[in-house]
Length: 393
Image: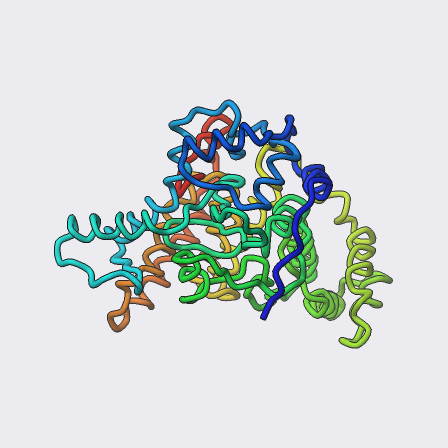
C-alpha cells in the first residue's frame, strides 16, 4: 500500500510557487476561501487550500483567478470534467460500470448520467486542465489530467505535480492509484498511460546524424519532465559510438553497467556539452511550459509513429498529453487527437477496426509532417491559448 504524502505546509507551498513561471499574488485568506466554496458549492482539499493561502498564481488564464476572475468562467471550468464525461457518454458510448443500466434513449441516459455525476466529488482546477478533487479536510490526493473521459494521474500529490509540470523533475516514484470515488475508475479501472514513464519507442538511429538527433531528443524529453532511465542514456551512447559519434563522455557513458549507472545523468550532460547540443536547447520563455521544446518533440514523436518506432496509439497518447494539452490545443493537432480519441473509443471492437484506426493515426501523422513549416502556422496565439477550453482548460 502506498503511503499518503505528508501534509503540505505553508512554507513548502511558497517554495513550490517559486518554481512557477507565473506572478504570485497575495494568498487567499480564510474569508475569501470560504466565499469561493460557498459560491461554487465545493470544498477545497486541504493541500489545495494551503497552496492558495501561500499565494495566488496569475499571469495567464491557465491559472484560475479565484479572487477576481469571471464567475461564469470559473463555473465553466469547474463543470468541465463532468461535461467531458457526458460528451463521451453521448458520442463515444462511454458508461461508468457503477451506474445503473444505460437507458436505450440518449436523452434518458444523459439525465441519469447527470444525476450520477452530481453525486461524485467535484474536480477543482489547479492549472489548465489539471485538477484536484474537492475533498474537504483531506490531502495527498493525486493531481489528475482531464481530457474528457481520458483521465490520468499527472502527479502523486500537489507538490509532486508542481515539480513535474514546471520544474521537469519527475519524482521517480511509482504512480499512485487514485482513491477518489467515481474518478478513480478512469485511472485505475482501465488501461491508460503514465505520462511520466519513458516514451514507449524503439531507438531508430542508423546514421551519425540521427544518433546526434536522438541524443538531443532525449535531452528535450528530460527538459519537459519525462522520465529517462539510465539504461536509455547508456544505449543511446552505445548507438552513437557504433555510428561514429565519439566524445570522451559518450565513451564513459556507454561503458557504464546497470550496477554503476548512477553517473549516467552527469555523463549525459557532459556529452551534450561536448557535442555542442547543450547551448542549443530551447528555453522556457513563454506562458506555455517548454513550448519550443514540445513542438520539436511533437514532430519527433510523429516521425517515430510514421517510421514504426512507436505504436500509433502509444505515440498518439504521448502527443495528446504532452503536445495537444500542454500547447493549449493547437488547431493543427486536432485531427490527430480526433483519431486517437476514435482509437480509444469503447465502440472500436469489431474485427479489424483497431487496425484501421491505428492506420488512420499513422496517416494523419504523415500528413502533419508533410504539411509545411514547423511549428504549424495555425497554432494558437497568446490570446487564443489563454481562452482555450476543452475539458476545463
